[in-house]
Amino acid sequence: MEKQKKVIVGISGGVDSAVTALLLKSAGYDVQGIFMKNWTNNAPNIECTSEEDFIDAEKVCDQIGIPLHLANFSSDYWDRVFKKFLSDHHEGLTPNPDILCNKEIKFGAFLDYCLETGADYISTGHYARLDTNQNSVKLLRGIDNSKDQSYFLHQVKGSDLTRAIFPLGELTKDQVRKIAHDNKLINADKKDSVGICFIGKNNYNDFISNFLGKKPGRIVDENGIKLGEHQGLMYFTLGQRQGIGIGGVKGRDQSSWYVAHKDQSNNELTVVQGGDNPLLYSEGCYTEDMHWINTELENGSECEVQIRYQSEPIKAKIYKTPMGNKINFHEPVSAVTPGQSAVIYQNEECLGGAVIRERISQKYYSWAEDREYNYEVYE
Image 1 (cartoon, rainbow, N blue to C red):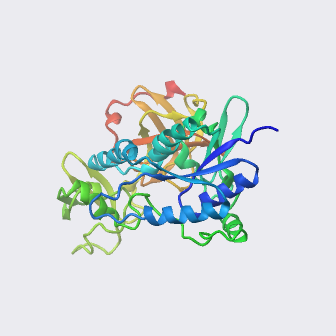
Image 2 (cartoon, helix red, strand yellow):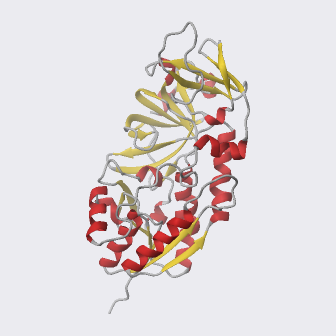
Image 3 (tube, rainbow, N blue to C red):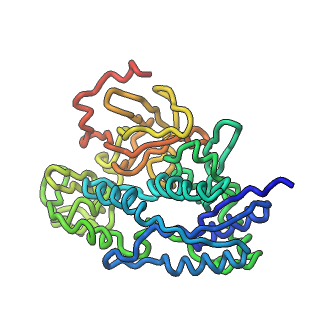
């Protein structure tokens, strides 16, 4: 008799990872669970739900009939994810640590740990699909558009994805809930976690201030006229409307204010009125080094770009230039945000992506625009 393939599932205490483990066991795999402790409870003034989640994970693994182990990756997470998160914020960027967590922890430290213990595969509750042949694997969107998480996996190596199984990629969230109910899992109705995992229920800006403090500066309009003061550029993101803190301004109409620019050198926050203000829009962006899951696109290739999780894909062309990767959008796009990721797709396939370094806009142009080349030669 052929030996069962061993799969280790990252069990979070939530319904998605529980159904993942249940489906794999039903499919005949030798399934074990690992609860990943990625965060330390010693951080100041921070409420963490990991203890409650571990209790839920134990209960659901008992129901499914699989062992659960605890693995502590908190030091890896602190060094490889959280420090970068803080550093990016300090530089005025808006990072997405969940992407780095998938690259460095789930498909880094966790994958290495599981393979060392004899696992053939690892599995998580991601809503994404894998199209595998003998030599490589393609990362595809999950069929549930409202839950597709391929965006968060674009930095994972193709070779590492060959060790992964994503059972939920072919299911909708409603189907997952139904499976959990049909099998009477204790967490069938547990609410999904929302936002960044280590922030949890804490207020985002309060959390950041525990580590970065305050750096007051001016809030100005597009003409440089002072409207108020901010407590630090790290607490704002481009396109943000709520929480700017200036309210109605005497002598101005009552249209909403939006963050249009963060000037690090002068510590100034520029805001404009109206969500359709041209200064909120960009014609493209420059990125850091592009990560390709498998094959790199040729210069000038047509593609679709997703500039944040669950945003609409944007038709674009991608270029490799002397100043790095440049993405030209077919139409101007609002709130392109340095620190977020531009993820590249063709149809259903996620090809890779990179962190947005600078946006290219009508007024707040990139440093590279001063030394613009004729990009036609690269097409």
